[in-house]
Image (cartoon, rainbow, N blue to C red):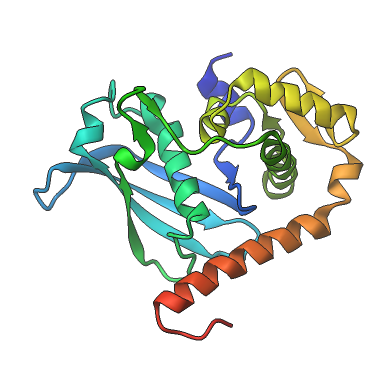
Length: 225
């Protein structure tokens, strides 16, 4: 089975940030030259905050000419994982605001996320504890939002966490041994023990969202709710 087929099977447009926010990321491929004449390429997308009754951020991912030069192509198969993870990191950094209106937000997809010396994407190396928590959240939220299993060895996840797919599988096996996941090959589904933590996961989601809203309220000169 190809990677594309695997991704479709698991409804892998649902991703969770290290800050604990479930995101539904929809990208309108392909990249196209900026209509303004500036030397960058643009990809539009929609980032929906899961379990939020429609809060979203409409984004214009702006790819710089400097990074474009090191990419094999602008096709989804070559760059999709990096784009998804750049969006997740922007949420982690509280740069994206989720609204009910369709406010288009530019996201600079630049050398911030690319190490030219090592010729690789960099999104920040996660600890094993962070990986365990993220895998719990991924498996929980995919089951809740899409009734889907999670592809634990997804290269996009490994890229986001700066680790390898085999390491993700190793930690998933630990979670399975602890009774939190059912692992079938590279696919994970939640056990009743994991689903029983729904209240905690939702509390974490709300807390992370409140912190993000406070940041944007401060920047806009508003009093946070």
